[in-house]
Amino acid sequence: MASSFHFSLLFLSLLSLSPAPAKASFHPHALLLPVQKDPSTLLYVTQLNQGTPLASENLTLDLGGQFLWVDCENGYSSTTYRPARCGSAKCSLAGADTCGECSSAAKRPGCSKNTCELFPDNTVISAATNGDLGVDVVSIQSTDGFNPGTFVSMRHFLFSCAPAFLLKGLPSGVRGMAGLGRTNISLPSQFSSRFKLNKTFAICLTASTRASGVVFFGPGPYHFLFNTDASTSLLYTPLLLNPISTADAYSRPTASSDYFIGVTSIQINQITVPNINASLLAIDSNGNGGTKISTVTPYTVLQTSIYNAVLTFFQNQLSRVPTVAAVAPFGLCFNSTNIGSTRVGPAVPPINLVLQNANVSWTIFGANSMVQVSNEVLCLGFVDGGVNPRTSIVIGGYQIEDNLLQFDLGASRLGFSSSLLFRQTTCANFNFTSNA
Ligand SMILES: *[C@@H]1O[C@H](CO)[C@@H](O)[C@H](O)[C@H]1NC(C)=O
Ligand SMILES: *[C@@H]1O[C@H](CO)[C@@H](O)[C@H](O)[C@H]1NC(C)=O
Ligand SMILES: *[C@@H]1O[C@H](CO)[C@@H](O)[C@H](O)[C@H]1NC(C)=O
Ligand SMILES: *[C@@H]1O[C@H](CO)[C@@H](O)[C@H](O)[C@H]1NC(C)=O
Ligand SMILES: *[C@@H]1O[C@H](CO)[C@@H](O)[C@H](O)[C@H]1NC(C)=O
Ligand SMILES: *[C@@H]1O[C@H](CO)[C@@H](O)[C@H](O)[C@H]1NC(C)=O
Ligand SMILES: *[C@@H]1O[C@H](CO)[C@@H](O)[C@H](O)[C@H]1NC(C)=O
Image (cartoon, rainbow, N blue to C red; front, side, top):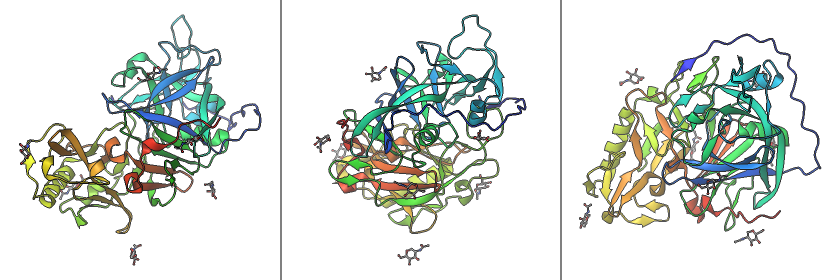
């Protein structure tokens, strides 16, 4: 339901938000959130503590999401919640131009008068609606990069209250979405400004159902057992700004909060895949095309012509292995009894996403390209995005698991590790034993 809303011009003074009262002098080096994969939706779920009294809530992790939004309709009660008054510096920081007047008699978080509104977006089902901007306490664990440390709290964390229906399509028990996108009020932006952390964060997702992956806010080390600092030996590529919002609703023209990178060609077995239309790989003046990274897309989605070119060439490069009937949502599957295994997964041709020059590629090995759908069937883990998708390549969760991705917002670049399996570790190997 893409829609745009009229906005009223508000004449705002550029007041900065009043800083939270100084707490005892503990200054965290970095912060972290644990992340689990939900086996039924294939989405990633994290836990944040919010409100007074503090309550732990499950949230779907949304890498390109604009901010934190939470269902305030059911079960959000907190004595420290405060709505953001229309025209306040908080509304200005959030870019919240519309002013809401909740008409219900029973005032509660998410329903108050003279409160500016955002458009919380369920990016899984592409639905957005309006929701109050408010602040409340959140508490998050610090880290030295080796173990979790003490919890630190932030008293005026900005988030949006959403109606309960916006939870549709999210894992059961989830109360909202945690947006890490490029906005003033995403989790990384608020944490780095409050705790004076470097403007950088990193994600390391796992498919494990027994252990957690991790998001780090702030600089490395990002330490995984045994003895791997995944913040070292990264390759870097510029993060690209899509000037046109990719959100499902917004009140004024704004840049996209998604993280785009510049894929210029695709290679399989080091050979360039022919017949990929280069103009689909660029972001055009309407914000269409290009390549973004998403944690709400389980498998990489390719525009139809790119998808067809990649499948044809991949099959051609693996022609010694018999194909079997494709299993949806995939289009190319093999008899896995004919495919050996390596440290980095099934022995299939590596896929390179070639970036700013021929020397910088994101290499996808078998562990991230092939999905075991049954005992004897391995499928190429890409899906067809249709002829006219908004974004031509959406790199999905399966392709980024056990890879560390560092979003360096200061330098506007992405650092990527390639498969940590090469370094004999995984994203499930952070040592969650607390030092605190
Ligand atoms: C979060 O989800 C996990 C797994 O579904 C569940 O065990 C836990 O109780 C949930 N936590 C809360 C606070 O709802
Ligand atoms: C980010 O915050 C600054 C300072 O408050 C404000 O001028 C700017 O408009 C905000 N950006 C967006 C996209 O809302
Ligand atoms: C933090 O960022 C500054 C400026 O970009 C950089 O010089 C410094 O090395 C960074 N610190 C760490 C620990 O990464
Ligand atoms: C390449 O893609 C652009 C943008 O979608 C389209 O206008 C053009 O016709 C395509 N070229 C070919 C040769 O298919
Ligand atoms: C895979 O190949 C093996 C050995 O050739 C054969 O026994 C098996 O039936 C094949 N499986 C499928 C799903 O085609
Ligand atoms: C790519 O690497 C080769 C060999 O290391 C080097 O000679 C060349 O200058 C590099 N090209 C670019 C564009 O960095
Ligand atoms: C994990 O961290 C704890 C606390 O620092 C430490 O005692 C333990 O040895 C670590 N585990 C491993 C396997 O290194």
